[in-house]
Image 1 (cartoon, rainbow, N blue to C red):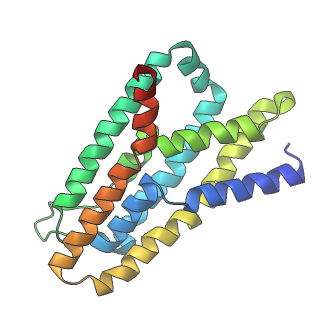
Image 2: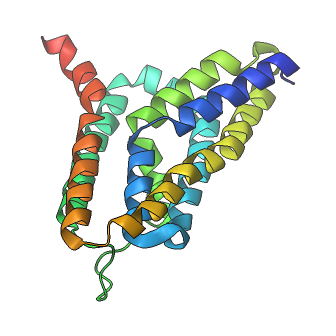
Amino acid sequence: MLPADALLALVIFGAVSSVTPGPNNMMLLASGVNFGLRRTVPHMLGVSLGFGAMVLLVGLGLGQIFALLPWLHIVIRIAGILYMLRLAWLLAANGTMGSPTGRARPMTFLEAAAFQWVNPKAWAMAVSAIAAYTLAADFVLSVVIVALVFTVVNLPAILVWAAFGAGMARFLSDPWTVRMFNMTMATLLVASLYPSVLELITPFL
């Protein structure tokens, strides 16, 4: 069991790292604007539960697999960058808050959960938390605690972004304004990839 001071530090770390800007929060902000808070709920749940599962699996051994097969992590990272570029393109191309034909839709629970595995910020958070807040003497239990804490504190943190986006929608009723907002979010999403791209190309420079 984690000591009380370590548990408090973990809660603070989880809350701060969850609420700071990143791919998940930018996408939730855009989803709140385009689709409203209620339709964004599956997206939010997918982020929280998906990331909690990711922390658990990384802590229980997946990280060791990547240590043995570093090329596999590189492949996943490249796939993540390409996927996020695709998401940015789709976001920039969506100039309305939703399509009456049903073509435009928010991210589903499974899509949001799967996205955690190609999200560079999620990887950094998961690895950092496992390294800093697990106990060698009681490793499995501490991994479970870390995963549960992140799941609990993550949801209200990301809710702030989705709710803020939904509130902004009232001031973005003009289709052109929404399109400019979506293009801005797409640009920020691409910009968030800079650390991952730099890390990939640095060995070749």
